[in-house]
Length: 569
Image 1 (cartoon, rainbow, N blue to C red):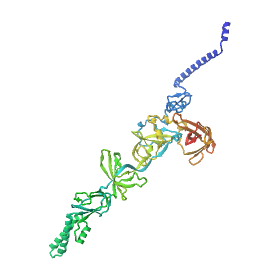
Image 2: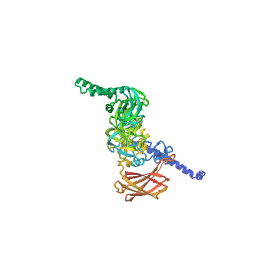
Image 3: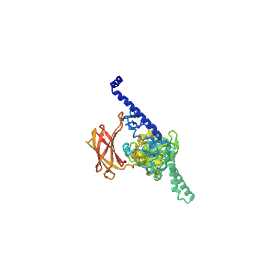
């Protein structure tokens, strides 16, 4: 017995400590089993794992870690699971934005009450709105017009084209208008024509004129009347052969037949074709000797597509510009005619417009830029950037207030200078997102994932009002800021210039991910120094121009946020 006691005393003491630890561990396991049994009896969940001290990635929730840091997949900063909202917390709370597929949204013809967050609404905190650059625009009703652009080609006015022919056969003796492109005036001689028929007609007219002088006073009425009729017939023949009244008067005055007769231009214009040449060319009535075009008024022919046909109206205002004459005043005209058929090769319709051309600036076959305007009257209009097209449907994000944005399906009309006409889905006075909406409507949202946009914190969810108009003045000590600890001072005033006191001011800086470098951020809660000024310390990780957000809260509610920047050296 004594030997056994001595053997126990000789053993090392650390072995007794191991035995004691194992006993305590067994007692702790038994206590845990009893605790879980009691929870099951009370209707609680049997398996309640503790999330304290664990972190996960918002973009890749399947990745978890026991230590804070960045996600190895996307380099996004890990967030604590202890503060992450669970599905049970969202259940029964209609204010939490849920995941919704845009393709499943029904078209809305009436706006929801202001501030009412529909199940499809997405929440973006005011500070994040400042960070991503959300901009809003009001839906307006205005008198608009559709502008159609096309390329036009200048052409002759077909009603102002003259072809010069002779009424008798003969030979060209002398040509006065002897090149194409020469401008001519009405009554100006073109060439001299020798025609035996014209010479014979002149002689007949002179004989009839002498007979009228001798027999016109005869006591026999039939003789006097016959001489008068003969003279009128001879004169009428000369006139039908384009002999002018001045030439007939000269024939009467001189009493001598002229060998050649000058052929005069019947119109003003430009010679575009010529077949009358010197050295006695023989001409006949069917030969087109000259083509003269009046270019003081021209046509412009433009091709428009099928979908633009509803806006093509006769009498609509049209403007043209020369593509090479920048800065010149556009010429105004009007639509004369819309052709009733399509060109099968291009699937376009030709539109004819008329333009004055007193200075002959527009030349045939010249290309011009055409703009056609058709008035539509008062319509509901939004900026072009407010509408997102998924290919099948069109949507706009409507500001519901308090940080909520609702995706609304809309029916669009034509595109106008003021933006896009909205036929259905929006009402006058609503506000829509015009900048950063591509973030709200990202690919993850189309797949039903709004989580990447962030969930509102509990104080912000509790009926937080929208941001008010505030102004913040930020200074750093030293200035410019340095890497490491910096003393910062912010002075906050409201829209009327009055200092905002007794508020909670948070200063946050952020740098997005660049290449393989993970995004970085730093925050500081400032203390009130009186007179609307707040001071504190901010740790700047590296030299950079940091995106800075100043968030002002009162009673746990965000009352405004200001976006600025800090440059550290």
